[in-house]
Image 1 (cartoon, rainbow, N blue to C red):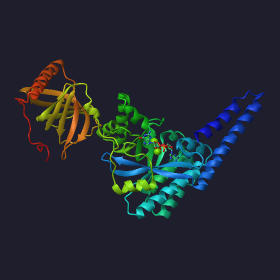
Image 2: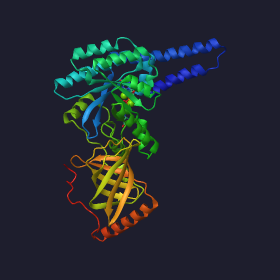
Image 3: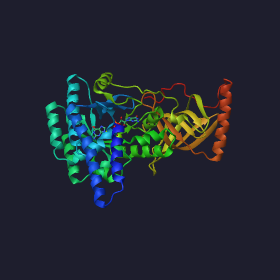
Image 4: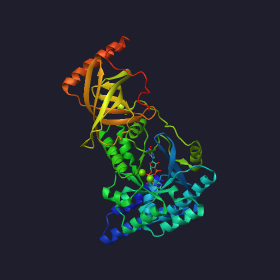
Length: 440
Ligand code: C2E
Ligand code: MG
Ligand code: MG
């Protein structure tokens, strides 16, 4: 297909760059070439609809435990000559020629039929997301069409989610907003796709009342190259969406450390090759029967353990106390709570606590503990969170030590490491041998 399109484009561009005698010729050649190009693709796409050369693949969306909660329907064009053609290649042409309207309706119908088929088989299908082109949104009759399909196949509207790209928000006029409103009234969920790459403002997010925000895969994929900026962007999007009470799906998750980071930042849902590529309906059905998917790659080294500083793991947790001093730059006074210090470095500590803190908020702490008869009173900020035993959590707290504390702590860590290497006890430290202390 690529070859055919590029041949066609070459044909078009050769025609357009040919030195013309006058302006009338340029526009004539231009319009002829465009006309030919559109005609060819249009013909093939139109035939594809009639021949049912399209297929729908389903890419599972999972929560951080790997439980399937839905899927995205992705169109595949199985051309008799060219094989599988990527939607990225033919959707823009279908949009240009307005054939996307027929294609969109075909997808909606097929998804509704599939949903009812799964329901008849007794499978629990939470929702399927369908990509909706802005062209189809602007065409009349979408709400009526969707209503009819839901009636024909007797499925609840909440099973459907429409994905609208952030880019297309720009093209929206008032009529589109009212179409979205009507779809929402019907019960169809709305997702903003490829968030972060377009130009939509926060204002749009508020106006839309979208249910879901899908973080574009460019941010997710750049995160693995220790790109701090992309991590900050992803954290901020997560924070923003949480604040607006939106569901968040991170798209394009391929690596375990990307997943680990997202999990720590309390991203709700994941879609990506790490769990599954888009698969044909029968394969997705098999996945649904199992209900959950394991990541294809395993944890090599969690991001939070790739530290700059040497970290000392206590043989048993050390009892300490923690006080929250600030939340989102506001001072708070909530008293001290018991914590277990699991490991320590000059960069911070890992603690276990029964407090459930939202990791996206900006927390500042004071914590104290005694090791080798030295008391440490440190300040820190919350960096990451992991579920621990029972109703407890592990928290990573980064601390910026003053030079005096840094020297004291470095000396204590050195002494403790030496003792551990000689299998000797660490004196003057309040170890907790019963880790159920925090579990109520
Ligand atoms: P999209 O809606 O953002 O869909 C996600 C794309 O990312 C899909 O590409 C999916 O296969 C791919 N993807 C998911 N996880 C990963 C990953 O971990 N790594 C990588 N490298 N890619 C991943 P696909 O299927 O080629 O679709 C491309 C685009 O075509 C879609 O982007 C969507 O904008 C459009 N599209 C697909 N189906 C339809 C449709 O039925 N209607 C409309 N209007 N557009 C569609
Ligand atoms: Mg999408
Ligand atoms: Mg997307």
